[in-house]
Image (cartoon, rainbow, N blue to C red; front, side):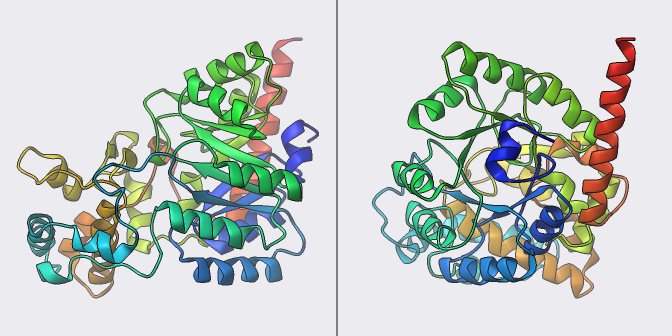
Length: 377
């Protein structure tokens, strides 16, 4: 396919696959799509290892990295300089609440051990900048940022190195701000998406963003994101003005994915209505598979979610313990198994290979375009 975003990224087919799993990134890029490694879960040293592995296995195919450099830091945590200070600020009430909730499902942990963190990991400005420096040391063909305007340093380095900078947005005004800042690609993500998302549906957001950018004189390609699980949906969004699709949830149900067997089973069984947009995992609204964890944290009886990144310092260790408990035979803990996933989960009916997903997208896209062309006579 020959359009602006394919020429920028060097891919054959403008199917962008966001994943925290290096195996998915490699499989998608080698199949003609474009894999994007989500860096948030790694420390800078770990990211270096992941990218070195990708470089050694991707056979020269293009790939990118997604980092999170928050533009706005909650005033409640702005003064903290490192994760040790952040961990010390998490109240005994929140620790006790977490320990008791897990205990209800047979996952034993003391309140003192609830919080766990590793070095510079987490969604913090310093970790995001460090990850960005690591990413630029590798032959990436795209770098992306979410949670606000892409930082000037990222845009400057991208232009210096010839690496396109993409930015995720959830509203047209955000897209206009990103364009004015100098980003190269806009990823317009609807509320159907897994992870951090806004409130506007993908079907409305894509034409709204495309129209706003053109009206302001910005010639910037747009990728559609949010709920896109099939090639036909991708074709529909491209008919609405997008130049490709940015996908995430569909890769969670692949054999290469970082997700557990327990979560993949829940994905296959889930309905689109089984997700929730909640602050109870990162501190910011993020869509995920709904469980008793979210009901407890979002209820009036709960202590209330912590600001980012404190919430993640509580939730991520908890979900790791939940997964481990299930593997060790605790069926009660299965009820708490969750992950970031969008409303498109209702379209997942089996676990496939990442290469197979790319091929299905290609075929479905071609069929959809052919049907539309056929309607024109």
